[in-house]
Image (cartoon, rainbow, N blue to C red; front, side, top):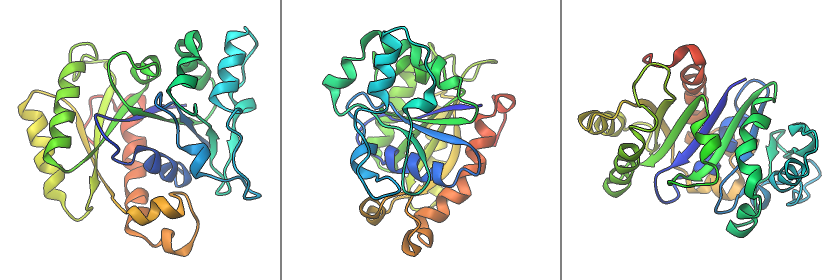
Length: 258
């Protein structure tokens, strides 16, 4: 299996929307793990097959309780399925509930890795000391999402500069770090410009492409099978970028160009 963490450097570039949408188009066994320490969005935005709300206490909270109790843990026991067929680990409702998991956080990576398929982690905004840090840093790949705005790119550069040494960016055997731009998929220049800027700062990351920014998708749901969503630029951009992400995160692809 492959463990891939999706994060932002600052703000809300649409990490949760992108991760759910990617999972719906993944083309293989996959789980979305909502580990945003500020509070997850999955429980409030997704519904089950019967159009009922997902259970807030079955997911990260129940998994953390089982870990703390020393019980034998199987990730599948704590998953729920959305109406669009995506298996999800519902996240904490807010910072207080996330902090209450305490010593369970460092053990989550092992539990996620035991899953036989791929795991896409929504780790929200990544900062030093984040409870989700052990999972993010132990992933096969970490992918930053960023809007093509000057302030957002500046924050991304600062965050990558902070982790350059501890993550050994660009060195053999290091975690693969990629960047996805959230914006206009037709604007390849934005991707190229951001890539050059990061390279000029000696930040060895891989530019993976663009996911379309579409506010309407947030209202309908990113994994929705409605005709409007499936035909949207957002959906087409996800279909295009999934194989790049999968190839990039494969262990044998570390250090290679995509």
